[in-house]
Every structure is written in C-alpha cells, then in structure tokens.
Image 1 (cartoon, rainbow, N blue to C red):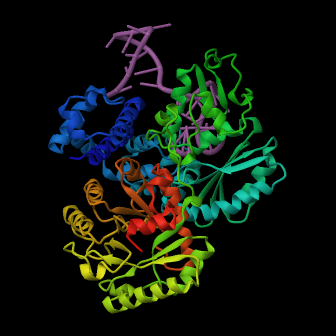
Image 2: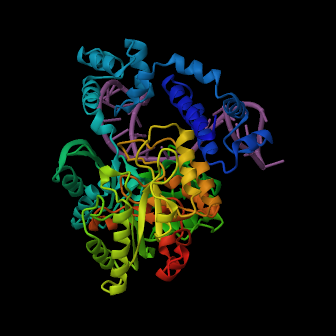
Length: 585
DNA sequence: GCCGTTTTCGGCCCGACTGTTTTCAGTCG
C-alpha cells in the first residue's frame, strides 16, 4: 500500500476512534501521524527498510508498526475490526452541523440510531429531545441540518466563493464603525475549494456591524448572532461568519482566522517554546494563564499593538509567511531559516499558452483572442485548439490545422498586434498513448499541449502509461490537465502522479497548471516537490473566450500554494526567451 | 498514541457560541 493510501487509513482510524468516544488525544495522535506521514519527503519504503520511521516526529512505536504492516501487506487487523464495529452510515452523521462524536454516540447508545434516516425518524418522533443534554432546539436543528445537508456540506470553488465574498467585504469596509476588514479562512489562503466565508473586522462598536451583516441582501437565515460573532446562511447555501475584534487585536485575529488550523497549532507550539501564549486575542506571556482565578479574561487583556502580521511572525523569530503557504507543509521551518520562496505574482505572467478559438470549441476568433491578450499586456499568446479526435469539440484535422498555422504566420508578420502568437494544438492522447497527429504534423507547431479527453475510465496503470507515453514524444511541449478533474463535480481519472512527474523530468517536458477555476490541475500539493526536482510549470488559462484569459490569476494563486517562484514557470519569461525555449525563429 | 534534560507519567492549542443547564458539555473553527 502506498503512502497516500496509508495516510487515508490513519485519518479514517482517527474518525472512527472519535465516534467510539476514544481519548481525544489518541485521536489527535492518529491525525498528527497521518500529517507527519503525508509530509514525509523521502520514499516510505526506504525509511521503513532503514528503520528510521520512528525518528519522524509524531510517529511513535505503535504507528511505526501499523504503517509498516499497511505498507507491506495492505491490510491492518486493527483497522478492519474498528471499521466493523462502527456502521459506515454513522460516519455520515458527522456532516450534520452541530453534531459531533459525543452526541452521535449518545444517540446511538440510547436510541440505537445508526444512520441519518434513523436519526431523522427519531427526531420526528421526539425521542431525541428527551435525551439528557438534548432539547427541542437541538432536535429541530438536527432535522433542519438533515434537510439542508446538501447545501451545508457543499463546498464552493474558490472563484465562486470570491465572487460572493467581494461585495460583502466591500460593504463592510463602507460602514462607518469599521476600521479594517478582511476576508480570512480558506478564501484568503486560496484553497481550491472553500467551505464557509470568514470575515474579520476591527472596530470598537460591534453592534451596528453585526446588524448590517445579519440583515444584508442575500441573507437567507441567521444561524448565530452574538456580541462579537455572527453566522449567516446566504441564498445559494454558502455560510458566512463575521467576527469583530478591537483594533489592537486585529492582526492577531487575522492570523488566527486565516488558519489553517494545522498552521495555527504549530504557531502556538512555537509560541509556547518561547514562554508565550498565542490566540486570536494576542501574544501574551504564558504565566498569565497560570493563576486562573485572578487572571484577566483574554478579551480584557491588551496585546502589544502591531502594524501587521509581519510583526507577529517576527515575534516568533519567523519571516513573514504569505497566507497561501499556511498549511503546515514546511512553511514554518522555512520561515525560521529565512528560506521561504519568493512567490510568483500575477504581474509576473507575460503571456499564456493553451487557448482555444472558434476553429474548435472557443467562442471568439483568433484575432479577438489576440486583441484580448494584448489588452492584458501579454507579450505572447499560445493557441491550442482541439485535435480531430475531439469531434465533440469540433477538433481540427490536419488541413484545418495547417490553415490556422498559416493564418497565425500572416498575423504575426502583419504587425497588427503587439502580442506575438504561437501556433499549437491541444492534441488528444489516444487510448493507446499515441497522439492524434503524426510527428510530421506536430513538428510544424510551436507548442504542443497533450491532453486526455476520452477513455477516462481505464485503471491507474493504463492511464499512467498513456500519459508517460505522450511525454516521451519528442514533439510534445507540455502535458495538459493531468488528471482531468472538475472540482466538486468529477474526480480525476486515476493517475500515478509520481510516475508522470518522473516522466516529465526525464524527457524535459513541462506540466501545465490548468488555471480554469474548475480544474487547477495539476494539483498545488504536487508542485513544491516537483519544482525542487526541476519540473517546469506553465500556467495556462485554457481560455475558450476572451474574458477567460483572466483565469491565469487563479493559476497563479494555485502556483503560490505550490511554493512556485517565477523561475519555475515558463510563461514568466520574456518573449525572446520563450521563443528560444520553443525553438521558434 | 506521542513526547520528553524539571522526562517513563501526565501532559497534549485556545476561546466563542449554543443549548442545555444553574455551572457546563459539546461543537466549531
């Protein structure tokens, strides 16, 4: 069993233990173990063989044994027994807001509830309200939660969440009482999908701000309203939380509510190592926590004012960590050594590849696309319409492709646009790994993007083989959307990502970071390691219309999450260098 | 279950809100 699968098993064990009411610290030990394993840089087999797994922080004697067993046999009796002891349907109950392991266990033990359907029935019969620690409101909330499960549980693509958040943030900033306002949470960290929207405001008078937030247009339901925190469900199902803090605490709170949770845990530990206690209220000497009775409440303590998050990191002897990196994937260690990457910015992008026109399934002509690229200030634009096998997308055959190449040549020669246009194709990778055009045709193109669009149901070995074979073709420039995933709609086809990256490196090929907000593929989690090994990225909008050229920004954000610097990305290079790279005169 | 020069036991990150209580447990982030 490989590392990723073992990580999943450990996380599943943690969830099951939670439901069984096990010691919370034991649960966390499994979660920590899963994280430690996930971020392990080396080949797992090697570490096990050299008996060094126990040296990894967070992996002790018991986990070494379990991980080793899983790695060697793919099975674990402990896990199987645990799984058998908890009905799978009980795990789903965790998705209902307000329900955690304790309540679920209690309902299970007292009422025999083992599934969401049974839970709904028990609520309708009024049995849940009769339990100790439960009541009418809890019962109603559970029923409402079940009814809204789809909407509540739904996550949202980052770009969609951003579109909803932007006007709310603007509205908050317009309020007189508001001194500062920011969106925090996974939105600020630029995660590919976002659950809730988190807003943070600095103000001395929270009342009017709470009032505005809970009564603004688009609020479907107010789910909580306190002095400093409110939650609403917006039309469309998105949840939004607002927290108001005193101005002196704003940047401590901003850091706290930006997360991630894992990053915060590490930051607090680092504070403790320095005799400090970190929370959303500030950074305080730890001894104020000792004498509980006389200690002032955190909300009554005055933190040292800071001008920005930079100062908070500095107090913990860390360089400033951009929000995108705050995932506890090595950023704290790097910040301690002042070895953080200088992340790519949207302004670094000088041109974009992999764009469509009306020749295949785009909505704008070649000239319209070039005009839009010029308006964005791009030095170059790469066209890559579909190839003939993608007949559903009006893919080009050899003759139409030749005509497009000729048209692009004339357009470049005419000097009509400042933006240089590269010829190309998004050529289909066929089911046997061959490409949709012959080498004779491919060699006439400046930039060949090879992608899979059909036959996505093969197994991992077959899909990986296709991708590797395509990367071995000397005329291929880059691999398009590696897994074919559509976020929140369709899982990608199974791919051995390590093998594909190895093949790209071995053959000197680029892998695309498809910047379409539905794709963001290859995933940001794979870029850090890949780039360290020398993998070159191209941030491609896969635009099918002029305004979609702007998708490149989503790609830049994903690239930042993947620790990428301008030097790791082809299309941060000036035109002359890109021409040289592609062998274009 | 993990960890450790105040170490092999007894800690493990911190606080707000809700709904249930009448001082607090559970959940959430």
